[in-house]
Image (spheres, one colour):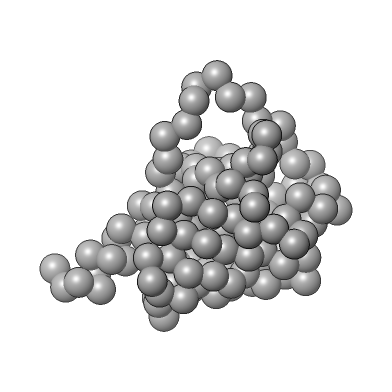
Length: 126
């Protein structure tokens, strides 16, 4: 397995639902569903989404940019039928299109892949 292949697998696991993720969070945390695009834009506008080895900006204009494990992350997003839908690229690799449920709690935002049925990734909003 090459270093880039290993890194790709790692970022896929790290960023998962949003990039394609896993995370350990408190089971008692109550996350509230973000139900519309206006609310989502208010939450992410001017913020950086962070987690270990990942720093992302999700602009209200539909762009995604940042760094994941030293490689550039780029993409586009739109709001469709109550879900955050994105195309994402990491270090030149296409991570694909996915629509995700978005929930928030106390300065954290969670993206759950496959319309809320898949893996999730939690980010701090800074």
